[in-house]
Image: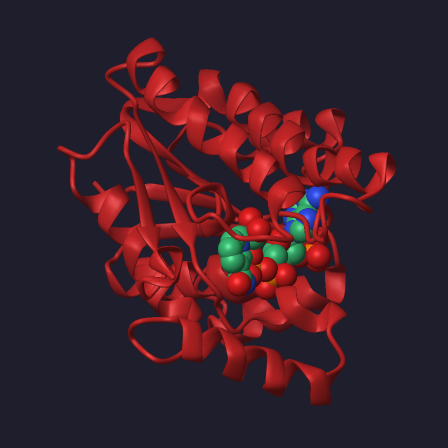
Length: 236
Ligand SMILES: NC(=O)c1ccc[n+]([C@@H]2O[C@H](COP(=O)([O-])OP(=O)(O)OC[C@H]3O[C@@H](n4cnc5c(N)ncnc54)[C@H](OP(=O)(O)O)[C@@H]3O)[C@@H](O)[C@H]2O)c1
């Protein structure tokens, strides 16, 4: 029977790329995000082969409503995050640090919790962490702490929720709208700098992270694992 994947944060970047790959792999796919226009654009890009439902992952009532409306499903992908918590340790503000957890860690945790009673016990959850949790990157202590919190949950949940499989992907620098907070002319220079620090010599594509997500969903022997898919930038 066709398996159903729900991707929260599926209207852009990595989540949208994962949706495209999983549709090709013959999964039934539901994508979700907050902005109705982004949702409509993503639906069009997927040629209406995915169900598109608006939700704010930080709103527990709305998340419960989403899962109630979908009923049982097989795999959950939590592909939304936060760009807060970046900057030198000496100057990062408490509110910025709080938001890095409030926009990513708490809602990923909450969505995973709320999905429990709807998830196929032989299915999976895939969280999105980041390389900032694994590389020693000056200026990333705050955002790295939030992404580290997500990666830390993974092995524990893989045991506590077994046989449900629980994994994460920790991307390196990926060219997605996540970077829209950087001015376009500065983004090219920033990406060139990241590419120079990355062993494969470039930043990544959302499709490359979508492939890692798809692998974790399809391979029934993978659990408790965070795949760092970063072109090697964590080594620099
Ligand atoms: N791009 C990178 O270089 C990079 C590197 C490391 C880790 N990551 C992580 O990878 C994940 C995906 O990032 P991306 O690059 O694909 O970003 P993106 O292109 O900005 O996409 C983020 C997606 O999440 C949705 N979203 C954000 N907040 C949401 C909320 N509260 N409720 C529901 N949906 C929400 C967005 O739609 P709406 O805004 O319409 O809600 C959008 O669909 C994030 O966890 C990010 O931290 C990215």
